[in-house]
Image (cartoon, rainbow, N blue to C red):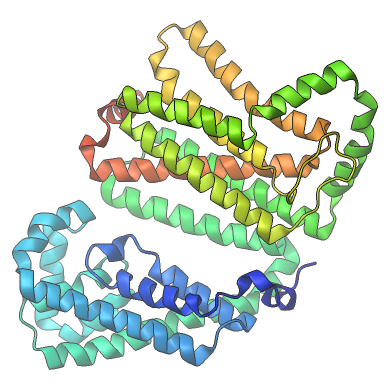
Length: 433
């Protein structure tokens, strides 16, 4: 069982002081107008408090760094408000969820309770990045602003560092019941659900279809966390890994071996890169900008995510592989990248096929390929069975998360993809019916 002491001693958690830089800029950007709505500064500061509990960061240093980031971020907002005024906020604020009604409410609070607006407003997810701007635009005296800014920034930093530290204290207790990696997955899931509800409450951009995507996203995260948990705790799945690894070689034969080697080669880095370039070129040619952007981010982010997990887990491959392979085993990169590539392929072109039977055959054929690739990795004994399941789960988690994020992006930029909005409009009509 992986303990907190073990985690704190892992070499990959040392950031050579870059962790403090990240915390500073996270706190800074979250306090600035517009950026503060998108930068998860609060979550990063909470993570910093958790690392204090692990003994990775110093409590004094992180309080100073987070406080300075928050204070300087508020100062930036104040001077921007003083220079550009209210008209700038009224003109562009609507693109960042800041409505006139919200502005008037913030303005009234600022007039009547300047200190309360600047200190308590820091703890509100919407007002924390706009209150300093409003203060500057209204001509709040700088000395008065600076006093409340310092008090609010320090209070905010101490509060959320304490939340992370307390979470670190309770982490072992909770994890002893549900598992350490499952505990992390639960926390991430809560964050995703909260963000989903927060955005949809203000913009109403997600349809019933999006709720299915969210459900699949959370199930994929759960499955991936369960696979990670199982290999560290030597659970039933790892015993099945060994059993299957020993039995699969009994089915080896020259014809089957050649077929499986061909199937697995579809998702090797060179071939998949070539297929990706061709597909991206075709998407750009067809001016499918939404899917082009999703494809680039999906493949690039999926690769980085998969490599990061391999580095963190350090699981060795089976020693009786049929072909020569190198690198760590968990998760299966072939499985993760194949599920991202082929699901995106189906997602991008399924509406272009008008014949229902042909569309079903296309979807079945495209989605069958990553499954066959996963089977080939187990057959060739280059991966454990749980590696492949984890690869599929990780790829699906990343892909479904992107679908939700890109839906959010296109809602703020309606011209990004007309095709996409027709697509979601169709779902809206179906819901009404």
